Image 1: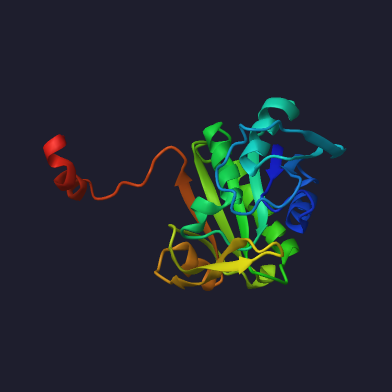
Image 2: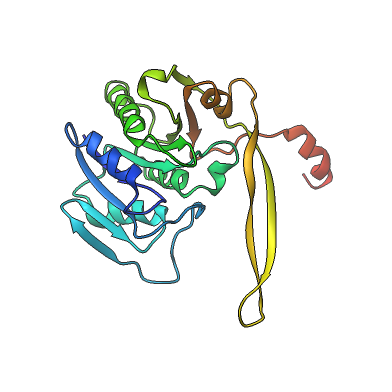
Length: 249
């Protein structure tokens, strides 16, 4: 199987290295990743400056672009053919709930789905002391299952793995995105030249542990697998919206 790996943590991310090592034995693996961290870059494509590709070693490349750029460059300019599978990760930190709209990790998998490539975005639920080796083994098992039972290419899977030893993982759970409770802040400061600047931050450690969601699964020791259709926005209450715009419809 020809597998393309990318991420938003950058070419030197240990999560990327562990994942590559775990898949190399049974697959042909290419790496095309950003040359630096591009966390929260979402699904941005670079149109206003040239992109450059650096080859580090055999089948390992970086670019000055975004995670979505990496996928496009890999498929259009680097790989010998379209990959059988794209994996974005392993991200250092979870991507659950609303995070899927901010995440460059998730965006790379979505770009793969746009190109009709079966794609996974993979994250580990931790902020430090990451168990990348255990998480890589979990991903390897998922890849083996996908080889035997491929899913539709227009759907990508957003996977979040508890930061636990492999033997403590309880299993897999098919989930939907949950609700993260943000406590965002904008901090105003003064630089050495007397000009104001702003720093966006805050805590995002709280969530609604509703059963069936990604947060519920991971917090209970399960690997969360959330299928996302890259081409369909979740239907909202159409009747309520019709009441607002009814006289124009």
